[in-house]
Length: 282
Image (cartoon, rainbow, N blue to C red):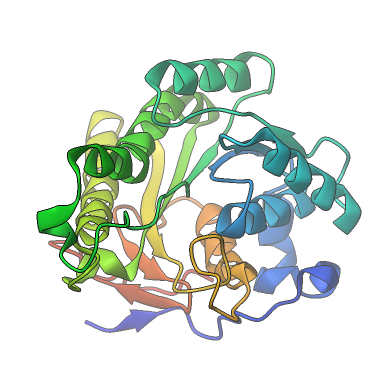
Protein backbone atom coordinates (compact mmCIF):
# COMPACT_ATOMS: atom_id res chain seq x y z
CA UNK A 1 0.00 0.00 0.00
CA UNK A 2 1.29 3.47 -0.90
CA UNK A 3 -0.04 6.49 0.97
CA UNK A 4 1.16 10.00 1.64
CA UNK A 5 0.29 13.50 2.72
CA UNK A 6 1.04 15.49 -0.46
CA UNK A 7 2.68 18.90 -0.85
CA UNK A 8 4.75 18.73 2.33
CA UNK A 9 7.41 21.46 2.27
CA UNK A 10 10.64 20.70 4.11
CA UNK A 11 12.23 24.09 3.50
CA UNK A 12 10.07 26.57 5.40
CA UNK A 13 12.20 29.32 6.92
CA UNK A 14 11.45 29.86 10.59
CA UNK A 15 11.90 33.62 10.39
CA UNK A 16 8.85 33.85 8.07
CA UNK A 17 6.63 31.63 10.21
CA UNK A 18 3.77 34.16 10.25
CA UNK A 19 3.48 33.89 6.47
CA UNK A 20 3.43 30.11 6.09
CA UNK A 21 2.64 28.54 9.50
CA UNK A 22 4.73 25.57 8.27
CA UNK A 23 1.92 24.59 5.93
CA UNK A 24 -0.85 24.36 8.55
CA UNK A 25 -4.25 25.87 7.88
CA UNK A 26 -5.18 28.84 10.08
CA UNK A 27 -7.61 26.58 11.98
CA UNK A 28 -5.02 23.87 12.66
CA UNK A 29 -2.45 26.50 13.69
CA UNK A 30 -4.87 28.18 16.12
CA UNK A 31 -5.82 24.78 17.50
CA UNK A 32 -2.35 24.42 19.01
CA UNK A 33 -2.65 27.63 21.02
CA UNK A 34 -3.02 27.19 24.76
CA UNK A 35 -2.21 23.50 24.70
CA UNK A 36 0.69 22.02 26.64
CA UNK A 37 3.38 19.90 24.99
CA UNK A 38 6.33 18.10 26.54
CA UNK A 39 9.37 17.84 24.24
CA UNK A 40 12.41 15.81 25.26
CA UNK A 41 15.83 16.52 23.82
CA UNK A 42 14.61 20.11 23.39
CA UNK A 43 17.93 21.89 23.73
CA UNK A 44 19.26 21.24 20.22
CA UNK A 45 18.41 19.92 16.76
CA UNK A 46 14.96 18.56 16.04
CA UNK A 47 13.81 19.03 19.63
CA UNK A 48 14.67 22.72 19.59
CA UNK A 49 13.01 23.20 16.17
CA UNK A 50 9.81 21.48 17.32
CA UNK A 51 9.76 23.41 20.61
CA UNK A 52 10.21 26.75 18.87
CA UNK A 53 7.42 26.17 16.37
CA UNK A 54 4.94 24.94 18.97
CA UNK A 55 5.70 28.06 21.01
CA UNK A 56 5.19 30.28 17.95
CA UNK A 57 1.76 28.66 17.50
CA UNK A 58 0.86 29.74 21.04
CA UNK A 59 1.40 26.44 22.85
CA UNK A 60 3.01 26.01 26.26
CA UNK A 61 6.17 23.97 25.69
CA UNK A 62 7.90 22.07 28.48
CA UNK A 63 11.42 21.67 27.17
CA UNK A 64 13.38 18.81 28.72
CA UNK A 65 17.03 17.91 28.47
CA UNK A 66 20.04 17.35 30.68
CA UNK A 67 21.78 20.63 29.78
CA UNK A 68 19.87 23.55 31.22
CA UNK A 69 21.92 26.11 29.30
CA UNK A 70 20.68 24.65 26.00
CA UNK A 71 17.07 24.69 27.22
CA UNK A 72 17.46 28.32 28.26
CA UNK A 73 18.80 29.11 24.78
CA UNK A 74 15.70 27.50 23.24
CA UNK A 75 13.49 29.68 25.44
CA UNK A 76 15.37 32.85 24.50
CA UNK A 77 15.22 32.00 20.80
CA UNK A 78 11.46 31.46 20.97
CA UNK A 79 10.97 34.98 22.32
CA UNK A 80 13.32 36.44 19.73
CA UNK A 81 11.19 34.87 16.99
CA UNK A 82 8.01 36.32 18.44
CA UNK A 83 6.60 33.72 20.84
CA UNK A 84 5.05 34.93 24.07
CA UNK A 85 7.43 35.28 27.03
CA UNK A 86 7.48 32.02 28.96
CA UNK A 87 6.00 29.98 26.12
CA UNK A 88 9.02 27.67 26.35
CA UNK A 89 9.47 26.51 29.91
CA UNK A 90 12.77 24.71 30.60
CA UNK A 91 12.34 21.51 32.62
CA UNK A 92 15.84 20.04 33.14
CA UNK A 93 15.60 16.28 33.62
CA UNK A 94 17.40 13.05 32.85
CA UNK A 95 14.92 10.86 30.98
CA UNK A 96 16.91 7.73 31.86
CA UNK A 97 16.25 8.34 35.58
CA UNK A 98 12.74 7.30 36.67
CA UNK A 99 12.77 9.69 39.64
CA UNK A 100 13.86 12.62 37.47
CA UNK A 101 11.12 11.88 34.93
CA UNK A 102 8.50 11.52 37.65
CA UNK A 103 9.51 14.85 39.22
CA UNK A 104 9.33 16.60 35.84
CA UNK A 105 5.87 15.18 35.15
CA UNK A 106 4.66 16.12 38.62
CA UNK A 107 5.80 19.72 38.16
CA UNK A 108 4.11 19.96 34.75
CA UNK A 109 0.87 18.61 36.17
CA UNK A 110 0.80 20.79 39.28
CA UNK A 111 2.53 24.07 38.38
CA UNK A 112 2.63 24.04 34.60
CA UNK A 113 -0.98 23.29 33.77
CA UNK A 114 -0.42 19.83 32.31
CA UNK A 115 -0.06 18.65 28.72
CA UNK A 116 -2.06 17.18 25.87
CA UNK A 117 0.97 16.07 23.85
CA UNK A 118 4.44 14.57 24.16
CA UNK A 119 7.30 14.44 21.66
CA UNK A 120 9.86 11.75 22.49
CA UNK A 121 12.87 13.19 20.70
CA UNK A 122 15.88 12.63 22.98
CA UNK A 123 18.39 10.14 21.53
CA UNK A 124 22.04 9.18 21.46
CA UNK A 125 24.09 8.33 18.35
CA UNK A 126 25.74 4.93 17.85
CA UNK A 127 28.51 4.27 20.39
CA UNK A 128 32.12 4.49 19.14
CA UNK A 129 32.81 0.77 18.99
CA UNK A 130 34.57 0.20 15.67
CA UNK A 131 33.38 -1.57 12.56
CA UNK A 132 31.68 -4.49 14.32
CA UNK A 133 29.76 -2.89 17.19
CA UNK A 134 27.32 -5.73 17.86
CA UNK A 135 30.37 -7.82 18.73
CA UNK A 136 32.65 -5.14 20.18
CA UNK A 137 30.40 -2.62 21.96
CA UNK A 138 31.00 -2.61 25.69
CA UNK A 139 28.08 -3.59 27.91
CA UNK A 140 28.03 -0.14 29.53
CA UNK A 141 27.85 1.53 26.09
CA UNK A 142 24.93 -0.72 25.11
CA UNK A 143 23.08 0.05 28.34
CA UNK A 144 23.59 3.80 27.95
CA UNK A 145 22.30 3.76 24.36
CA UNK A 146 19.21 1.71 25.18
CA UNK A 147 18.52 3.73 28.34
CA UNK A 148 18.19 6.94 26.32
CA UNK A 149 16.83 5.73 22.98
CA UNK A 150 14.27 3.26 24.31
CA UNK A 151 13.82 3.25 28.10
CA UNK A 152 13.74 7.04 28.35
CA UNK A 153 10.87 7.26 25.86
CA UNK A 154 9.01 4.54 27.77
CA UNK A 155 9.48 6.37 31.08
CA UNK A 156 8.37 9.73 29.67
CA UNK A 157 5.29 8.31 27.93
CA UNK A 158 4.25 6.37 30.99
CA UNK A 159 4.69 9.43 33.20
CA UNK A 160 2.70 11.59 30.77
CA UNK A 161 -0.38 9.37 30.59
CA UNK A 162 -2.17 10.84 33.63
CA UNK A 163 -1.92 14.35 32.15
CA UNK A 164 -2.94 13.16 28.69
CA UNK A 165 -6.00 11.41 30.07
CA UNK A 166 -6.98 14.54 31.99
CA UNK A 167 -6.68 16.54 28.76
CA UNK A 168 -9.00 14.08 27.00
CA UNK A 169 -6.50 13.62 24.17
CA UNK A 170 -3.23 11.74 23.90
CA UNK A 171 -0.94 13.07 21.18
CA UNK A 172 2.39 11.27 21.47
CA UNK A 173 5.08 11.33 18.83
CA UNK A 174 8.15 9.11 18.84
CA UNK A 175 10.98 10.56 16.73
CA UNK A 176 12.55 7.46 15.24
CA UNK A 177 15.02 6.81 12.39
CA UNK A 178 15.29 4.89 9.15
CA UNK A 179 17.82 2.83 11.11
CA UNK A 180 14.80 1.16 12.71
CA UNK A 181 14.09 -0.53 9.36
CA UNK A 182 17.76 -1.22 8.54
CA UNK A 183 20.51 -3.73 9.24
CA UNK A 184 23.42 -1.51 8.25
CA UNK A 185 26.78 -2.94 9.40
CA UNK A 186 28.69 -0.63 11.70
CA UNK A 187 25.67 0.81 13.51
CA UNK A 188 23.95 -2.36 14.70
CA UNK A 189 23.22 -1.24 18.28
CA UNK A 190 21.64 1.97 17.00
CA UNK A 191 19.55 -0.01 14.49
CA UNK A 192 18.30 -2.21 17.33
CA UNK A 193 17.46 0.78 19.53
CA UNK A 194 15.34 2.43 16.83
CA UNK A 195 13.59 -0.81 15.88
CA UNK A 196 12.76 -1.22 19.57
CA UNK A 197 11.49 2.38 19.67
CA UNK A 198 9.21 1.63 16.70
CA UNK A 199 7.81 -1.37 18.51
CA UNK A 200 7.39 0.68 21.69
CA UNK A 201 5.38 3.33 19.82
CA UNK A 202 3.15 0.76 18.11
CA UNK A 203 2.65 -1.27 21.29
CA UNK A 204 1.95 1.78 23.46
CA UNK A 205 -0.65 2.96 20.93
CA UNK A 206 -2.44 -0.39 21.03
CA UNK A 207 -2.32 -0.70 24.82
CA UNK A 208 -3.60 2.81 25.54
CA UNK A 209 -6.45 2.57 23.04
CA UNK A 210 -7.41 -0.80 24.49
CA UNK A 211 -7.26 0.34 28.11
CA UNK A 212 -9.06 3.67 27.52
CA UNK A 213 -11.18 3.21 24.39
CA UNK A 214 -12.94 6.54 24.88
CA UNK A 215 -9.68 8.52 24.97
CA UNK A 216 -8.73 10.32 21.75
CA UNK A 217 -5.46 8.42 21.37
CA UNK A 218 -3.01 9.21 18.59
CA UNK A 219 0.40 7.72 19.35
CA UNK A 220 2.64 7.57 16.28
CA UNK A 221 6.25 7.55 15.06
CA UNK A 222 7.95 10.00 12.71
CA UNK A 223 11.15 9.47 10.70
CA UNK A 224 13.05 12.79 10.64
CA UNK A 225 15.56 11.90 7.93
CA UNK A 226 18.93 13.62 8.11
CA UNK A 227 19.52 17.23 9.09
CA UNK A 228 22.16 19.41 10.68
CA UNK A 229 22.09 18.40 14.35
CA UNK A 230 24.63 17.59 17.04
CA UNK A 231 24.43 13.98 15.88
CA UNK A 232 24.96 14.83 12.21
CA UNK A 233 27.18 17.85 11.60
CA UNK A 234 27.70 16.97 7.93
CA UNK A 235 24.14 17.57 6.72
CA UNK A 236 23.07 20.80 5.05
CA UNK A 237 19.35 20.26 5.73
CA UNK A 238 17.71 22.35 8.44
CA UNK A 239 16.22 20.58 11.48
CA UNK A 240 13.08 22.64 10.78
CA UNK A 241 12.44 20.20 7.90
CA UNK A 242 10.63 17.98 10.41
CA UNK A 243 8.22 20.65 11.61
CA UNK A 244 5.43 20.45 9.01
CA UNK A 245 4.68 16.75 9.55
CA UNK A 246 5.19 17.09 13.31
CA UNK A 247 2.61 19.85 13.61
CA UNK A 248 0.16 18.04 11.33
CA UNK A 249 0.30 15.00 13.59
CA UNK A 250 0.09 16.94 16.86
CA UNK A 251 -2.80 19.12 15.63
CA UNK A 252 -4.89 16.32 14.13
CA UNK A 253 -8.50 16.18 15.23
CA UNK A 254 -10.29 13.12 16.65
CA UNK A 255 -10.23 9.99 14.54
CA UNK A 256 -6.65 10.43 13.39
CA UNK A 257 -3.86 7.86 13.08
CA UNK A 258 -2.80 5.70 15.99
CA UNK A 259 0.11 3.27 16.00
CA UNK A 260 1.24 4.43 12.54
CA UNK A 261 4.51 5.50 10.95
CA UNK A 262 5.35 8.59 8.92
CA UNK A 263 8.31 10.27 7.20
CA UNK A 264 9.01 13.97 7.35
CA UNK A 265 8.61 14.22 3.56
CA UNK A 266 4.94 13.21 3.79
CA UNK A 267 5.21 9.48 3.14
CA UNK A 268 3.14 7.11 5.26
CA UNK A 269 5.14 3.93 5.86
CA UNK A 270 4.66 0.46 7.32
CA UNK A 271 6.35 -1.28 10.23
CA UNK A 272 5.64 -4.81 11.38
CA UNK A 273 1.88 -5.36 11.31
CA UNK A 274 1.15 -1.62 11.04
CA UNK A 275 0.02 -0.70 7.52
CA UNK A 276 0.49 2.86 6.23
CA UNK A 277 -2.20 5.33 7.31
CA UNK A 278 -4.49 5.46 4.25
CA UNK A 279 -5.55 9.14 4.31
CA UNK A 280 -3.68 12.46 4.10
CA UNK A 281 -3.05 14.19 7.41
CA UNK A 282 -3.93 17.66 6.12
